Length: 250
Image (cartoon, rainbow, N blue to C red; front, side, top):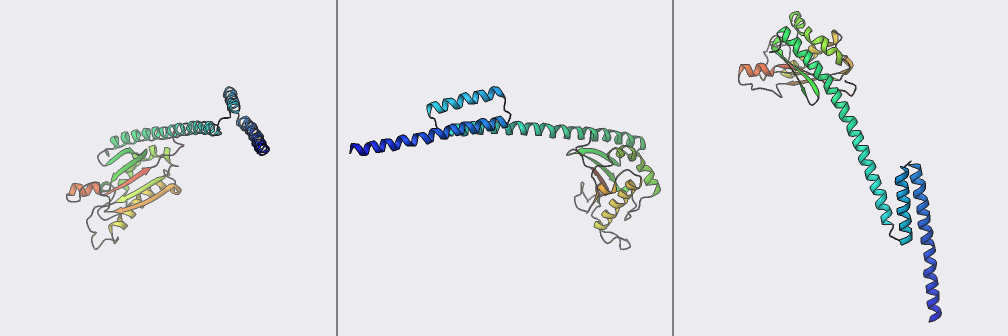
């Protein structure tokens, strides 16, 4: 019986050596990884000291995982913060430029007597220009008259600063059915044709790049006022130009 016990003790002691070697290899591995990561020398020395304590007291390897996870979390937090700061700065710069253009447009519209027919504002960091269709088109028409085009020249110079931005031009109508003599079969077609006419005006005057423009037609959908009254229907007949911000704006 005593002989058997010695063998068992010998087997137990034999298992201690691989475990110790494994910890040594882990230490070497972490030293290499930390050296490759170019970690701050002071923190690296703290880590070596902490790992040496772990070896001497035979603590659980879970402590090693905890240290690694902590460093990983801190690195992710720093990376996220840096990315967030960069994104916020870019967005702020973009909005600043669009705000300047908005002020220029408002001033030009005031001087041209169009401030009651054209509204300019910034929403979701994009520049919105809403033009009442009554000053653009005759009833049921999508043709810009020469006098109307002359009125719109006050918008040209400020908008040239964002000629490379993505542009959306959207057409809207009221809910009144078109006359049977109309060349358009529905308010959908009329709103689309009006948006395209406005697009052609700005592209023809070298303000917008046609490659960056998209057209949207809503017909009588998405009214911003009631269709019950004449004034409400007038507000719903409109063309909206949306200048989307880009990271290159300043």
